[in-house]
Length: 269
Image 1 (cartoon, rainbow, N blue to C red):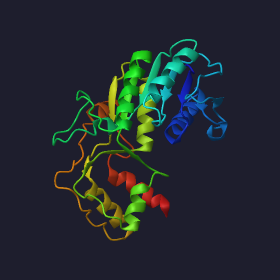
Image 2 (cartoon, rainbow, N blue to C red):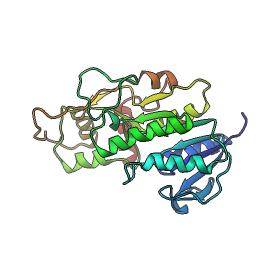
Image 3 (cartoon, rainbow, N blue to C red):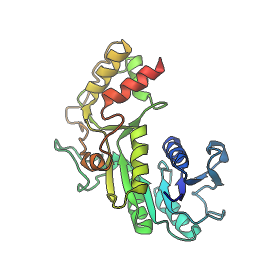
């Protein structure tokens, strides 16, 4: 397979893991980050703050993956993407924009939401993500991935919550994906000939928060966290359809929270 040059815009945990997989396959990875400190030695570093005009010369790249979290400016994503479009000598053949299922925060229905359902953001961050998706498509004809709750090594907030015995909303509907499977999905999107334009990054089993924390508590040998007091009219979360991801990546390494959190807990010792 011909080696390619991939631009990572953002080099956090997901971007770094993706970059390492790409380098292992023989690709060249260029990473943009505000500081060089977090960029792996195997990547070609470009230090640039996309909140400001890009002064560095960007190389021609075959593909680009954007994994930046939302910023303080409501137009953060759009501005960053516009600056990338100006700085790149040409548009990459493929761009992937990593968004979030937070764009559905205004939905409260019992049926699963699929990729044909329109976003309903209710927060500034949700609005910012939707604007970023639109900008990525307008400027780069990007593929958009919306991961649900990402967990894995170093992403153990729920485990810490269980250990602390903090009350949780047991009836809240949730979706999640292990970081390793999200990275595999992103890598696959960069390589397949006919990728989906929009993809929910969710595993095979939506679950209530109560199911998840009960499993974690049992594996840790601690009491299940108590139920939090909730408003009877409060939003109960969403169920997301993962059929497109299942078609793209038929076998997840961690198809449900049972395998995923089971591995995380086992690795904790």
